Image (cartoon, rainbow, N blue to C red; front, side, top):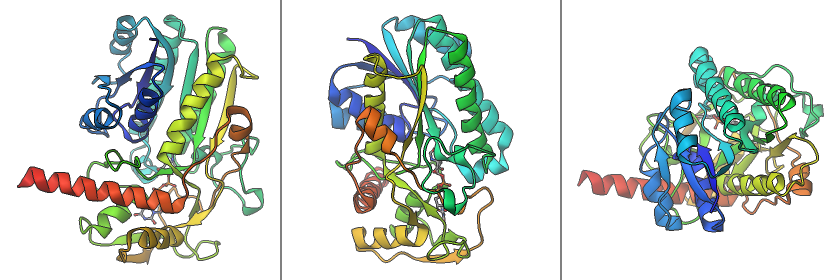
Length: 349
Ligand code: WQD
């Protein structure tokens, strides 16, 4: 059975992709993840759901020699999915060099190893943050929307990452690539046995909501109530993490079956629905039955006002269809938070 190498396999999106790959049953899956922003417990969760124990190499993807050793140990790798990256917009504004080194050096290493070890299929975890601040008349964004200045160092690492891949693909005929531009991945596996587990105080909205709702955090601050949106709070395109994971399996098949129409293609992965922060809170309250304690505060540096996607290209070329709506996202996130809290209470008793 051929192997797919994923980086960030114990992380939020990587672990959900590993579950989908194992359940599909066509590939062995190995991971590179040093648990900088994830927990090794993800291996237990993946196994509990899929019945498969993923091999994870706890090495830094920025360490080229260590990465080469993984490729040498697995000569049957036929595809790489590069999830591993730091991804908090706010944090990247405070620590830009940390983001540039981590996100770009790891990408360069993975590409170099694909060429050296003859791995022809490369999928890159990109982001809607490559679009930067979008004028409302340009929404929804398509893959043709001009990517200008990213609004944060995080977004800049994704924009530069896409350019690095482009220049690399032009320089070699050995590798084909796809960049998947995620909008806002949220939610958890429908079983309630895997989900997002931020380390410390969460940067992202939905884990902040669920931790506040379960009393682990005092109050959610809505970052900005004076945006030019229908209710003044910022607008995003939330997409269920399992829908995102499924897109990676379709993208792999698209490349491996030779259906790609160019050696490097980019696809939006969003639900196509714009939801404001206040609407996301209302959807959570409806799905969980819990009233959320929140206040409206100042804007967060690096945030864009509003963005949502036209993801019809992924539907047309990859055959990708979203299965979950905002209520499923909030209900699954809440179910996962309750599961997490139960596990932590058991550990403390
Ligand atoms: C969402 C909205 C905040 C926390 C994310 C990922 C990034 C990329 C794009 C994939 C914003 C508001 C948040 C809080 C709030 N995805 N918010 N209070 O910044 O859109 O970026 O999606 O690559 O990796 O980070 O997501 O969840 O941080 O914020 O009001 O306590 O929620 O201002 O409007 P963001 P987020």
